[in-house]
Length: 367
Image (cartoon, rainbow, N blue to C red):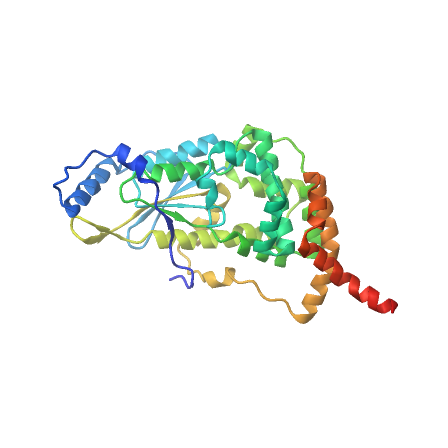
């Protein structure tokens, strides 16, 4: 059994408009229980016993007989959207789980044009929000990683997360289907990632993201169905970062596995009030599929990957020195990739405060 304090489902109820368009009108004289029974029967008839699914779909079984259909996707891919739609329509799931957290749920509600515009525009508000959520260093690193996503967006002319929006839409057309967020919160991931990197690794990462300029084709994206697109881009650009891979990929494999196992719990049949095995569809980046399969039957302690150790007193002093150096490096990197973004960063109150703190010892020594 998993050990955690984070077992509450982060579920979203899809809009009922699409659902009502797909389902037949029910006589008003039917009791609620009878209506629910009819809808349940309708879904059972639509559900295929032995569905023919895309090659990107894996099937895992829970101890109680519940089924998980895991769809591995490329985050910038039209064919991944089709794979998701095909799978949900075929298996008519009880739950759909996607690789998103509450900090990224807005991409489900924005249209493609708005997302394209947002991805290409890294402005002061986004910088301040990232720093407020994650702290100075983690926030700056998040902005640089967002620039990678923006670079891909500009190259391909398509916004990320199309497979998640497709899953959200399709889930709204399945009776009784719950839509659930399954990823670890971004602030936790970035804080743990930054804490795991050495100063030299942080500088290399920022420098590599700064000079990202290689063209990416749609064919390259489809090849990335064998590996997470962001992970592959970073690996090719600046070499391997074992600690970064551990926090951004491996730890999230564990978290996603935990969330998917929580979703594959028996559900109640409204016709008999008996518990029956659930059918779940998980939509994750292809790079997470092997890790989820490896962890599926393991005992997991989720608390270990949700904590960020507080720094020691010596660590705080050292971090202040490192922060001063990194502000310059990352500020220049952001300036390179975002025009005036570097000047904006240097004008932020948080950055000014750090620089002022670093100047104080020098001023005291001159007195």
